[in-house]
Length: 122
Image (cartoon, rainbow, N blue to C red; front, side, top):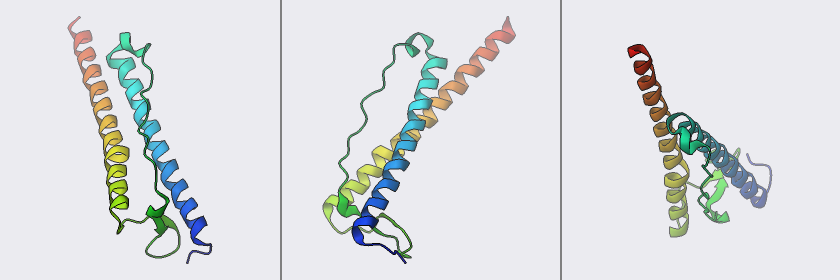
């Protein structure tokens, strides 16, 4: 069971979500930079990171997990605000970065394949 009070549970869950999102955002930015360097070398030097999505995390969206041993997002949220937060978190902080990573590496593979064909022809 969770040994601490609800405030520590909220901080623990918030930090877990925050650090996970930071990790995924870092991977998305790195894949985008790699894609720009490989696929568009002229634009790779002048690229500046876009401002990130600023999503104010409500502290009521966190609570104990079903088994009660740790804390995370309350996936069975009752309030409209919590449901919208979880949906926005899923779409903007998970699906879009994953899609960006997949598209970036697909473009890199496509560019490398085209370069290999060009080298073989010469």
